[in-house]
Image 1 (tube, rainbow, N blue to C red):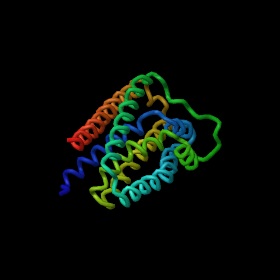
Image 2 (image 1 turned 180 degrees about the vertical axis):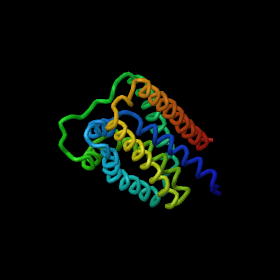
Image 3 (image 1 turned 120 degrees about the vertical axis):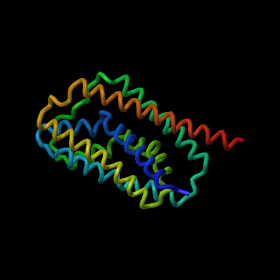
Length: 213
């Protein structure tokens, strides 16, 4: 039986994991910095472009998983790989905490299209959805299509709110992105990714052990 509190707890974990992912410097964040120097609404358009690619991918994963009975071994595999990837991302973020995001220069494409091609060409984005994202979708399945739709909307909203805020603040003043702010966000991301990664990994190992007993 599914309780409303379970749904809220699940959504809370989605917000934390999603925000940790979007807060980490990467191609999408870098192109936002580049475009924001000229347009304060660049983040909005880039987030919309990101959604053009991400929403179909999310629903494709959901409908594929809902059409087929996912073997326990596959769920365990996704949990193990996704958990290890999350912990790896956390460790990498800690190791690269003193590195600034690399800016993309020389692009004349508009912000909307930049959000689309930066997302579609990002191998890390695809890998994230095939592992961590798939694990989240498997958890969202128990809440049905409506619950999954809420999950998808909240996940993308994290991208939208963060990229929009960053672009606006950078347009107003680049001084906002100080070293202290960067370090604080990095440590938050490290804690969330390592914590949830360990949880996913541990849950998968526990499920595998239960299957063998």
